[in-house]
Image (cartoon, rainbow, N blue to C red; front, side):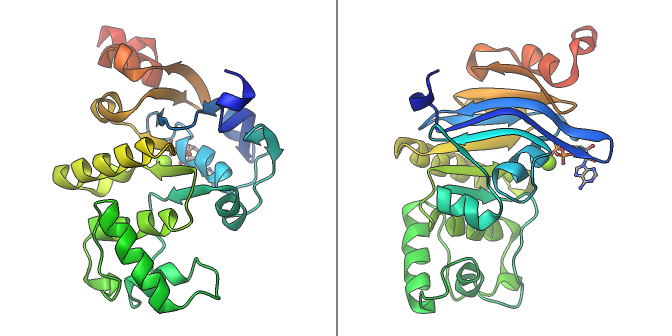
Length: 243
Ligand code: ADP
Ligand code: MG
């Protein structure tokens, strides 16, 4: 694909911890308006990769291009300013604070709590993830807490939203609701980078998939054109064919 059909393009991205390469020369590109799966077993390097894309970890080497321009994403704030939002696997919410107060912590300090509450409530309803801005986080279920993280990301109007294993904490009903939200984001022309190790989900909702194993890309495909066995082989190696 040419540079102008690519929102985010990553080349040879590497992250080492000591002598261990959690990500080892990863190439991936994300197109506008696609739901792109990042698929791989535990420890494959998925979270490390997206932490580099969101400015949580600095790459050891490699290149990130955003809308065709080389970028250095030095912090989550820098990622948000570019138009990248992220929903982490482990939430960073203060239990004693309300929904709106938690959201305010990641917003421009000039914006009033009332305005944040109004916008968060409206946005949460329009994306099918209703939230009460006055509720205390301590009283909310894990699914509701994830909604806060999603709404917080959407308030920044991101072009790319990254979700790290979002369904691992959801009931099947909550997961279905999330998939409707992702379909709406896609219909709006936004891109989603969707991390999962669940093949059936990826085949159901994703347009493309990049598969990681031991920090390297082992396949890039349209998951709907693959069988569960062929995807599993990319994830765990060819030995699975004999299991
Ligand atoms: P995944 O999200 O695919 O399960 P991770 O990116 O979390 O995988 O981890 C990839 C590998 O890197 C794992 O072996 C993990 O133990 C290791 N790793 C991740 N973060 C660190 C760190 N901060 N220090 C050392 N090793 C790490
Ligand atoms: Mg992970």
